[in-house]
Length: 127
Image (cartoon, rainbow, N blue to C red; front, side, top):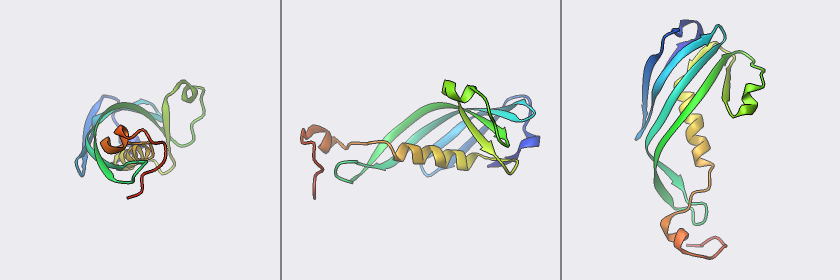
């Protein structure tokens, strides 16, 4: 789902995107001429790799996240307070890109399967 920045309403509007077995849902609204807030939740099952053995494991997602989307370059001290600022340079908010970015961030975490979790060895398991 894509929306032009200038068409974002001042009142909260619902959105929902399904990607495989993951849902990205919530509300978005304009908080200033150049800033949109997205209150979102990512729920569902997502496949990741075990960082020790490399096997695929399925994890359950249920994460709430608040994003601010800027129409162009954004500079402020707010980003240092843990807020996530996404800069759009094409005046279009792409919710699928935001979801894909969050899923890639989840993929880059260290996930350990149940077999490796019970193994106290600190080395990778070769299969």
